[in-house]
Length: 108
Image 1 (spheres, rainbow, N blue to C red):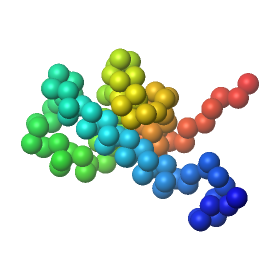
Image 2: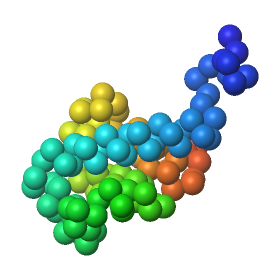
Image 3: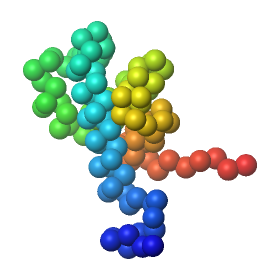
Image 4: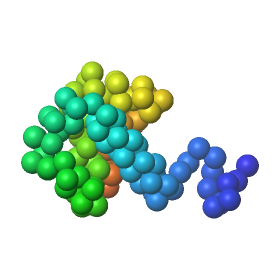
């Protein structure tokens, strides 16, 4: 069955991947905001003040940076993935999509 946009099922276009990746990064940021310890560490490492998060979130690369931060801590990565109801590998795929790189699986 062909989707409304003429694509094949299960194959999202670049814009749809970007939007899904951004939504995941925003959810991850929300998770951080709900955990004062993680939020304080994230803010300290990025140099962003709590009042500047909304402004920073509009900057190119910020959402990819959120996912970079998440991916750097395995326990946090697993917690965010569980919170979002996804496999941890999806965070890396989203990070790559936000960075403008296409994820490709190595095939033996």
